[in-house]
Amino acid sequence: MRDPLSKKVQSIEPSGIRKFFDIVSEMKDAISLGVGEPDFDTPWHIREEGIYSLEQGRTFYTSNAGLKELKEEIANYLKRRFQLSYDPAGEIYLTVGGSEAIDGALRAMLDPGDEVLLPQPSYVSYEPCIVLADGVPKIIELKEEDEFKLKKQQLLDAITDKTKILIMPFPNNPTGAIMTREDLEEIAEVVREHDLYVISDEIYSELTYSGDHVSIASLPGMQERTIVINGFSKSYAMTGWRLGYACGPKPIIKQMLKIHQFAIMCAPTLSQYAAISAVRDGDADVERMRTAYNQRRNFLMKAFRDMGLKCFEPFGAFYVFPSIKEFGMTSDEFATKLLEEEKVAVVPGTAFGRCGEGFLRISYAYSIDDLKVALERIERFIERHRK
Image (cartoon, rainbow, N blue to C red; front, side):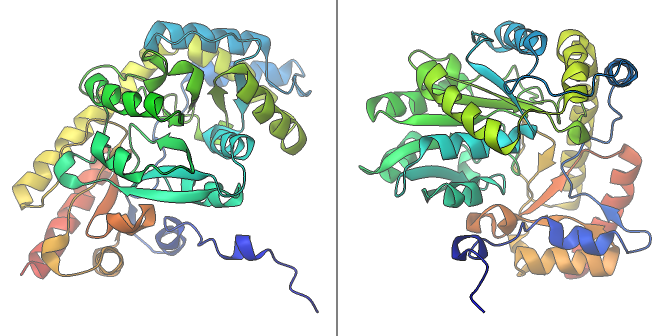
């Protein structure tokens, strides 16, 4: 019998995040600090709108691009928060989470052999989606000494005559790194000079702790060459509602929408109605959750300093990325032993790229009580294993 499977798909490794959580789900008294999911309930006014929509029988398809009212609210929000101006009629569409938008952008923009510059460590979906779109991933290894920011010279060194797209994964998962306006201006200069396009994943844009997020699309000459991806999962604690959006130039959005039309039809209708309430009335909810995350971030950083665990200070998302190089173990070995010996699950840095070796991703999207218990266990573990 012939092989029924695609060689391309078989060549892609499964997500490195899931390994430990399949184990921890069956381990008594285990604490997981690995999943990037807010521990807050979706705010009540958002849930209430979803319930009301269901009661009203709004269980139909929307247009492929999504509800007009929601797109208009998103346009208002982006203008108000990030100084971005988009036409709701042709430059915004709703997706099934931000991940669908990443996939759609790459498939709409790449021809076989086009190169995509991918800074790592970064979210696990980028590289497989590039491969599935017949692109060629070109990895740029971000460095701890640079606070895991993308530097101008790194970008220049990576560009070839086949380079078409730069992925900008900031605020960054897993490192928590951010790019300031000054950082972005240097990158934008190179992008314009070499006629590149940018896919800017800004899903953590509301979770920054040292000033407001700056979108690279807001810089001069960048909106016409940037796809901005965002969504509701992280900012509004709406992970299970599966709703994101993409914004960009009409010719690109038109082709992304074509893929969405045939593969998805439309984003979940109830989620779209609920999201109107989120983006229109949710600023106070976002501020409340951001304040709580910042408190947890500060708590973890102090705990790491007290136990002598090296960790650069992150200013975005809800992750820390401590170094465990002093212990003489790989990231996978450290994470495995920590789970076996202390029942704490974290993610090896290598799940986010080879240059993540020697680091762990720890999420602080958990209660202070859980974090306290987990840190006590981590401290016991490192004291036993410290050379």
